[in-house]
Amino acid sequence: METPVGPVPLPETAHPRTTEPERALIGNAHREHPLESAMPRPLLFLDVDGPLNPFRAEHADLPDSYVAHPMRPTGWEPPARPLRVRLNPHHGEALLALPYDLVWATTWEEDANTMIGPLLGLPELPVVAFPHVDRFAPGLFFKTRRLVEYAAGRPFAWVDDGITARDITWVRRNHLSDALLHPVDPAIGLWEKDFELLADWPEDMGLVD
Image (tube, rainbow, N blue to C red; front, side, top):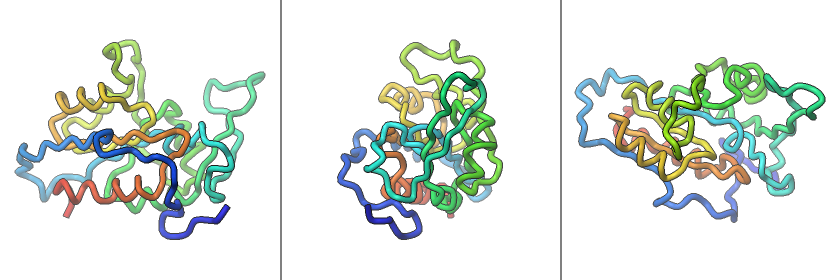
């Protein structure tokens, strides 16, 4: 397989991509941002399994830059076999180049900082905890309400393989700022077009200078 090149070493793919209607570009641009010049950068909520670790991908379909790592996150103890986590080390640099404040939003929780981040070259990041899964509305992804609470009105983007139309609708109705909910196919992971979308969205929404 040809090794990808460029600032985000992820080649164009023949896989079906997420279409515009499936993306949740939740724009509340009509809600004024009177202190826009003083606003912090938007948040980028990062899932691990799916976007960064395309766990449903066939090995031959992944770029050569992916490396497989055996891991035992918290609670994954013998006799269970270690998880095979496939990561692209170039993703860390690409994520840090985006106009966001990065936040882990994954069931790996603190293990994302100790096991995943160092392999990507990421610094220690804030982590969203999901302590009360049973509180969330039936049919709603268990992360959705918690991420809106964490954002507290701040614009955010979110990449995850678990986002559905119900989550998109709920965020549109309950989050008081702009949001980009971007579903990622766990058989593909993050590719060049995903990074391009993430790079362009804050500027398109007037959230950064």
